[in-house]
Figure 1 (cartoon, rainbow, N blue to C red):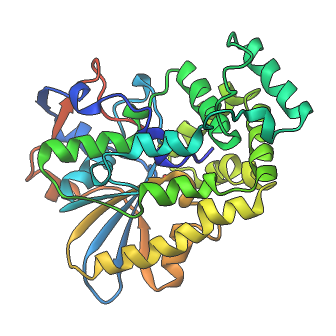
Figure 2 (cartoon, helix red, strand yellow):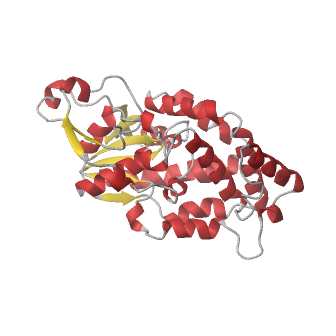
Figure 3 (cartoon, helix red, strand yellow):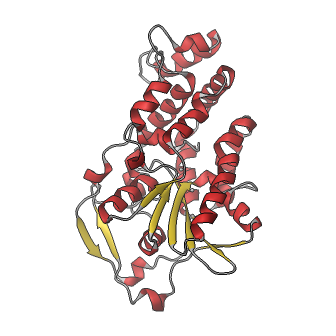
Amino acid sequence: MNTPRIMMSFCRITAVALLGCCIFELPDAVAEEAGKTSIWRVTPKDGGGTVFLAGSIHMLSEEDHPLPGLFEQAYRASDELVLEIASGDDPEAESKAIRRGMYGKGGRINDDLTPETYRKLRKFLTDTGLPAGAMDGFRPWMAAMTLSMTEMMKLGARPDLGVDNYFESKAVMDVKPVRGLETVDFQIGIFADLEKAMQEEMLLSTLREMATIEEDFPKMVEAWRSGDEEALGAIILDSMKTFPELRKDVLDRRNQRWVKQISAFIKEDKTFMVVVGAGHMVGKRGLLRLFERKGFRVERWHGEKPEKAKKKKRFIPVGLHSAINTPRRG
């Protein structure tokens, strides 16, 4: 369930308005959170810049906040924030997603599905209390993602509470530079350009996953929060075993491109916080292994040493109805 961030963006709630207001200083014992979570430090062995590579869950609930303190530390220590997509780069992101994900006049989803798949879709919709034709105007790939997001939102998860959206909103308020690794058009194209048969398989797989999402989604969030890559791999990578070509497009090839881009950032001799989906971290073709094979030093980050940390004040913004940070989809 490694839904690309663009699909989160077009249904996000205005996070800047929600993330408000009060700031409280936290004692060092709380700010210096012990243990581990899904964040690593990547540095060149011959000196240079630093990258905090942070795995993201793109949708989280209020109960998932606050985020692990190490995420806040990495953000404060960084000169620049890097995301899969920087929302400010393309104000037309939502309309582009909708245009490519919906049919024009006369088109319907059953035109691109077998009668059996269409029957299963309609049954799922009516079983969950929706009109049987609720997805008729959606292309199969968009219907699959919309159903996944809708079910996660029923569990209390929201895009505006996801790790990347939270930190992007924070960076905007802090006037911290934000850059994206990809464009909106590129991410949409991964799915919009799929062959009809693959889009139908994607929809069928989503319908099957909905039966266990109430159990699987909390497991994924907990694995992300505790930095359990093995559990994350079991959930995320196993779900894509039946789609090897889609996995290459969604994960593997993007990872290869991102390693090149992020390696160039490190040469700038600055500190970056790079936030991407947690699914991109795990496995033999994940970012962690790719950086190691390129000769970088990759280490799980446990925060600053106490003697250094005490010299700094620890601040955390409070909003979102008493919850601000999130343990969230990297």
